[in-house]
Image 1: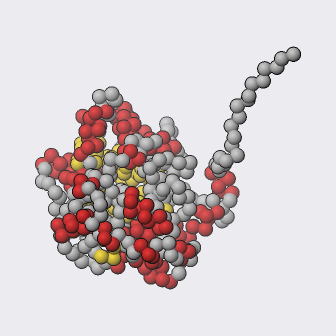
Image 2: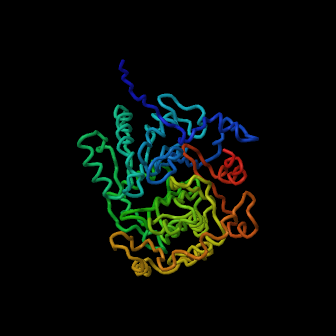
Image 3: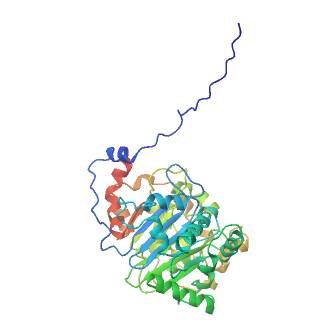
Length: 432
């Protein structure tokens, strides 16, 4: 007698993290306050992080993407990593509106039809790879409208070349895109808002963009990350100002951008890729630690700080400490958390600071102004890690002042008043 025994395939799930449903998460949190029917009433600025992770998608965080719905004008997409479209469809609802989302009361298709600006901070895949699908679906959703709407695209010049190449195999509606190079509206003089070029084509496109979104000012600045990496500032006529760091080391140009004009940032959306104890990795990869992001917010006088772009290997809530915040130093401003409001020397005075690190000149924006010789007081990192608690001590409160800080999560929404409440909900997040 003979037996043929075939092995039966079986998936070993013993090492797989069990995902919780929304109901299971809420069941673990005590004293949950239900949302009001329309919590965004009166909120002129609501920032919605769609993806808050860095480099690659993970179980809980997709890669970089944020949206802003400007009440009465239209939508903005700040960076567009892979799967942004899928995240937006879940967040906004497709084909019908997600009625659980009371912050942006539009379906995905409605949001596309009112989209006014796509911004790409730099040419890394986790910040722009989803733009192809977004533009393709925007083109399909709007090509039958009369009149056909146009979309402003603000990005490094190489992004447009990439779109032109890809449009040969997929219709992206390039004939209805108004492209603006980040370098052409860059703030390069610390004492005055003087763009690098006076290009009539870009000036017309920028004027149209301001009109489309009700903006009184839109500026970029070079930051320290990779070639052609930029930060962004948007100032609205209703009074709010949003500054987005993109990916960067602590950077004098970004502080200058935040201080430009008569109003400090209402919200600073700043990357906080790595915890403080991994500051050596942060320097090597040209990212910011959590405490460095806090110091940048203090340096520009921001009212609210929203932390995003977290490393996928760091699952804990972000922590910051007094010593690490006070150690952050950039060119022109010195110790940025306690820097005076006066702007110092010109950008030209800091070009030599980029030569102190072994980095190719092409990889550094000479105007970004990071002091590589004093990136941080390395000896202070890793100390007093437990200093930040649910009830921060007096020393930390004295450093933070009136700054409100929150940590971003995928497919969430933050008005300034939400960021103010974040500190008091930290213990609930830890329970989840």
